[in-house]
Amino acid sequence: MGLIGRIMVGLTKCLPRFFVAGVAKRYVAGRDVESAVRVMKKLSKEGACFTVDVLGEEISTLAEAQFFIDEYDRVLAAIVEHDLDANLSIKPTAFGLLIDENQAYENIERLLSNAAENDIFVRLDMEDHRVTQATIDIVLRMHAKGFTNVGTVLQSRLFRTSADIDSICNQLGPGADFRICKGVYLEDESISHTDYQPIVDALKKDIDHMLDRGAYIGIASHDHPVINHALATLTARGMGSGKSDPRSGAAGVRKGKGAGYEFQMLLGVRGNVRRKLSRDGHRTRVYIPYGERWYEYSMRRLDENPDVAMHIVKSLFMPWTNRR
Image (tube, rainbow, N blue to C red; front, side, top):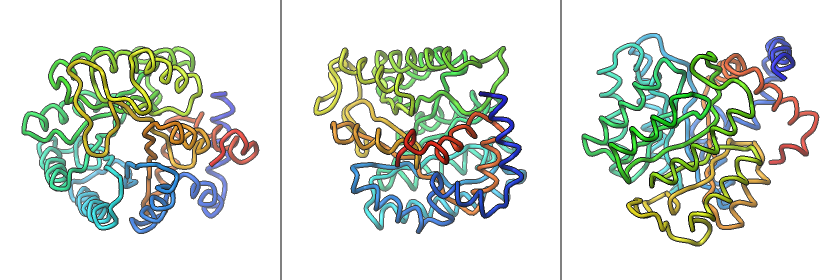
């Protein structure tokens, strides 16, 4: 599938921009915050909650970070104004992490402070291996400053993830809050799993590990084997729909959170599965990306992981495999 995916990436890049826009609109909420609000209001009727991401590429100057600072202020204002059940997802490199680490810390701390005033959670998205430790360090540093409304993403394809779970949980205790996913960035085989089954197996183990450490966990997967495993392992621990979190030492239910866990899915992907989970009483969160830079984002994601192209092809020619 990797070879076919790479071929599809090449073909996609040759398509007119308007055609790519027609495909992308399923997965991107729009170009502005107003578009994102409309999508969230619609999906709220399906029992979903949200995490909002302002699309953009890795910045090359600190001046570019101001765009993201200002835009996330607008997102926060919109969430409050419309009383949306939503939090934020940010990429630390968009706030200057690879240019000036101290300035990036200041930029992120400012956002966390504004979000905390309205009891809104902020998720630090995990990018490629260059910033894995730096992203974790931001979370730890912010918690030390009293900003407990922040957590990170971990990627199960990386060999280090199990050790990172222990390290973060040892330092944050019940304040540890993760989104766990396979990971979209293709990394070298010296530091990561590169085949589908080992990645899925690692993701299942990481879910169990996080649950056993008492952490809050956002289970971010569209894979039926992963979802089925998560449901089974939750049941085995006395957790699940309509139940309080029985784990000793785990944090109580916080605003915008479930009883120790939630399921997370991308906008436009397997909505039928998400709706069933919601009907069954599980908290479900939809990732809502928006922004003027949708095209650059889409192309970069395809370059990072050509297999993503296969999901696009399936949604176009086999839509029954990916119903809204």
